[in-house]
Image (cartoon, rainbow, N blue to C red):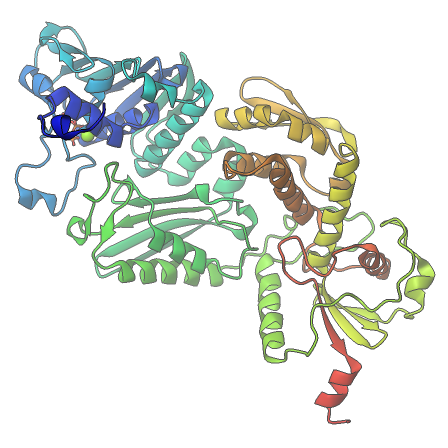
Length: 598
Ligand code: ADP
Ligand code: MG
């Protein structure tokens, strides 16, 4: 429509169905939004059992059955009208909302964009009632037979709105979003029996166990034997603010913050203050670019925050955000620092054939790193972070150590704290961060090889199988070219299970499953704007970091010699792929100045 004086003058009130459709755009983005709204309604109705069943990623059908209080005929007719809610009555009720819903918008919105059939029966009534609505076109309420509670079926979402329908993704992607909503609600309501069925097959059946760790293990069967076993409990209560957290140990950190589940009085929220507090709590315990796994449950008076700031209520406004921040940070950090994070035999998960590797906890590593960093900040030498001063020879292959090259330094090196190598150079000495250096050497090697062809791989003696989520399976399929280039061979191995048959030889000391899990994570959450090249680069970064020797690992003289030789041949060994320096150089003349010799 063109706007000119004539048309601009004709302001008209939109009809109610149009208003609902527009409002639906805010609350109902995709099938997963419907699942969230309806499950929340069931919880508000006091249900103890909720079953969700979807077909075709929810595009064809979403059906939710609960055993809650139900609605009588009159309420059933009213529930789908805009702004109809039983949860608030006066504006005063807006302060201190204890239910998940209150805006009276969801059912009206959903009813305006799909075909609905709702059946409901209240406790104690002799029969049920049902109503059908087709994109806002409402039929009459009529009696029918059904059990106590409510069943709502939504078919063909957005079928009259092709522009919206077009934005829906594949069934698998939509299913991934639904699973995520289901997961959030399941974590927040561990006392409820919840079932998720996809195309008639049961994906999850969580029965009332009231045991959070158990629920976490059921919800995250894949990376999680890890997750549920590596959580630290903490609680704190202060000024009406109650916090309960299950914090992942640093060794199960992830490449993104998807595994940070924060709940406020049973509602999943995203909040930048809280994310910041979590990040700060783990400061120094994780490598940059890693995110902790955290399940955080906050309980506070409903009056102390406003949920009415976002259409889907995923954001809230705390009246005292500082208190929330400082209490979460304090409780989490105190617990983390007071916990012995040592995990003998589990960390780092690499087998060094010849080395007498001594496994040491990441905390200590990072404390040493912190202390060193602090030291060097105060005693900053004139020239830092330069290449080793070894006399340069013609570049050879990375893995062939030139004996005499190192021999000329007459073994003048030393490993300190199993984390750093101090080596004499022509005009002074250098301190090398062993993990960072090794990482950059491997990274360069990987880049060079993959530029030429795909990475060489090794067949596993026994294929390792792993469970994979629906969306995980999808990203692996979509990125088959990438995994192939990496030399990873994956085959289907049963329902939601895959097996690794071959893995790159260069990553022989990396656990294939662990690597693939992180790869899935990375692929699922990569920035959509990332081109193939940068994505590959990110993957190689991750691979290098995993394959590199860790801080805290004792090295043999031979291994140190190897690294020093490799360093000399590497192009950019002075910085690890994350951009941190690998080497800090001190010159004799600097030392002499410091000791007032000159
Ligand atoms: P809100 O949840 O914000 O009140 P909705 O549009 O989601 O708004 O629901 C409107 C009303 O319908 C609710 O206030 C509630 O009274 C009723 N209702 C919705 N779902 C159920 C259910 N599963 N069981 C019982 N009552 C329900
Ligand atoms: Mg609602």
